[in-house]
Length: 636
Picture 1 (tube, rainbow, N blue to C red):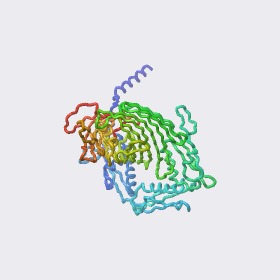
Picture 2 (picture 1 turned 90 degrees about the vertical axis):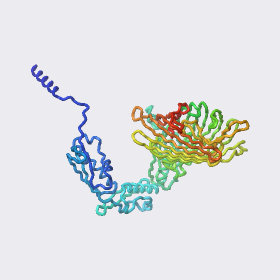
Picture 3 (picture 1 turned 90 degrees about the horizontal axis):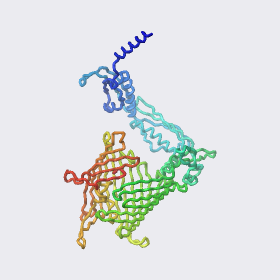
Picture 4 (picture 1 turned 60 degrees about the vertical axis):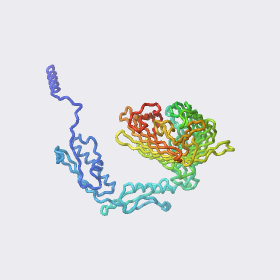
């Protein structure tokens, strides 16, 4: 036994001695390969190579596995040509081992595709089957199918969806539709068969609703509890009378409008047939938490450091009414606001508006101390009682409308005014992310008009003339490469009629949202004169117009640990003039600098510093705290 152990030990040591050390850093040998295409005219070689979608590990697997992966990838080419209507397309794959050419003397494996694209197919005829005597009255309009047109794989599915929409609008809520495409290989044509099962036309019976509060997951309480919404009032919002055919568009719009109120997290609508040929509609929904509370501390370049708090309650009395109260205390501003909102005002009466029509009204009591644009060393103290009403709704998924009426009583130093201003605006948003866009466009035009009055409300006298103004802002976002993003904004505004300086200054430039590194609204048209005491008086423009460009290069952090940080280089430029150019001198100013951003939930902390303001030379400019801008959002 002892000899046997010694023999086993000897062989183990010998095997260990001759076994090579494992190389944990060894890289698998790559099998050189190339791909080529013969006979392709519709697509370039580069487009076809991309479409193959060869996996990254292709070069390090054995040749048998490579051949298998390439045959699988060949199906991608078939799908590409079939989607373009080339159903006669064929391809033969040739595998050439140890291939060499004049450009590469190292042997490699060549995967050569010999392709025959064939002729493109065209649509021939569409035949629709199904329906009944009543459903046949549905007119099929808005279809994209045209005989003789080039084949498009999206046309028939879109038409099937359109047919379903048309049937639902006539009350066939449970319509089913499907299709088959038949190839005529002799004539290179596609024939289409669409099958429709309309089901029964749904007529209105009774409407009932049920709402529940969200489950209290934190306390492991998942039992259903009755919601706050008044179900009798909810039932009254349904506008289709008993016995009428239910329009499918109204059916879907009712759900989307209630969702747009943001009162509910989920909504479910279903119909159940009755014995009298009518159908009852059952509405069920889960409500959001009705209360909100927010508080914050902030720094604002005009008002300084401050803090704010806000409380809100939704669905008062079960009728979706919202009440809110907020308070703001800062170094140069104190404000108390009481708010009321109704997120469903006329919301179910206008079918052509796809969302609820929301009304917000806020009464604010405001006190602030600021510096007027032309006299930064003086103080302007204001007491205001403000009532602002906003009417908003969506015209589509990407377009929103807003109308605002702002009335306020203002006591500024020794003067007292009653001010009225109305404004309408559209917001077009085609970006990938509303809060932090990286790609897309935004477009926002607005028009406004206002007037000022003195005296009492019963005996008001207009001061000056009514004024009007317009503004247009376009913003674009474009990824460049890697972590580099670009963003640019162009804005133009103009007063069409003479306003008071207090109103005209809204188009003066300067500050963290316009031209960084300059005092807030310190860029304006003006002229100077001398008063009776020999003092210089600065007169600011009363019909201002401005043009502004803002450009940023945004660099995202490539490291996961600091992914929420962003470095930015910016350039701001503006020209502000006045309609009366013979009297007021315009101003042109620019700023170049850098900044950092920190993205935190829905906020972006922004810190910018302006290096350059004087572009008459390229010399360095001295440091100044006034060139630092801090804000809680992107510049645009």
